[in-house]
Image 1 (cartoon, helix red, strand yellow):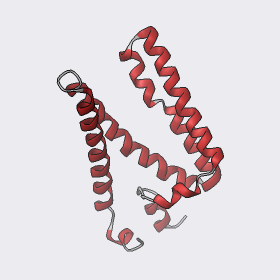
Image 2: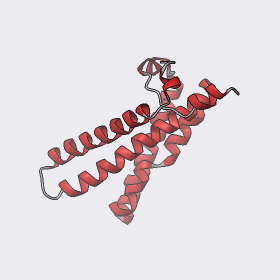
Image 3: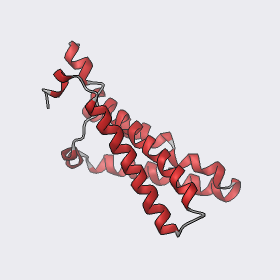
Image 4: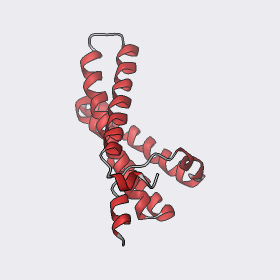
Length: 143
């Protein structure tokens, strides 16, 4: 492994064209894992309350299933990139949860959810921008 390859494996990339390369099988498995996690969270919520079921909505099994498929089809390097992107999105979800918990009791539901979604996007994109800005100059020449 060269030094350049090692350094590049630590950055998060945005590749919208990759959406076209996702096959039907991967899409179905990801959708199924997400639906199963959501159903499990709903069942737990009915029996134990929302405080217990909330963390299940971020069930790591969804990410694990996705990363496994990506690793098998596109290689470990791509799976690592997706895992790093998931961390940035997860930090955005923390912002969503904080904003939603503050606003849901004080504002109309639609406004709280729109604002929380904006917070998720802002935090995730800001972290991505920070990550990109912190790249070394020799890494920036590749893109």
